[in-house]
Amino acid sequence: MYKYEGIPQVPMSYDVFLSHNRADKAWTRELCAWLQTTDYNGRALRAWLDEQILDPDDPVSSRQLESGLDRSRFLGLVVSPEALASRWVQAEIDYFLRTRRFGVSCRSMATIPRACKA
Image (tube, rainbow, N blue to C red; front, side):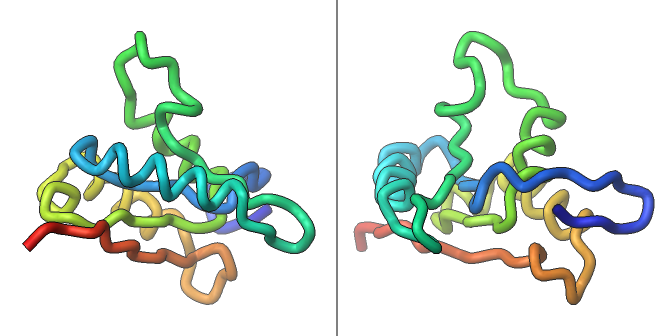
């Protein structure tokens, strides 16, 4: 759990929140599957992927994404031209950075470049 001023403690249910654009969905699914089979301290990593958590029949709300980010230790950013142009991806990055304090171990972001064709 983490704690910072004005924000309640939240249990960390996920190791990484996978932020991506829908154009990168297939690649991100493969990444998620790989992460979920990767051993971390004697257990599989827990990845947050929208389609595994959210109801596909419901429109996505920023609050649902923020809840996933709140419960994730790390933000994994799948980098592609589409992701860099996405307002949703930017909102996820902004929220993650805004709600984490420097020096707190859970304030970490990894960029994962998607394989792009030249």
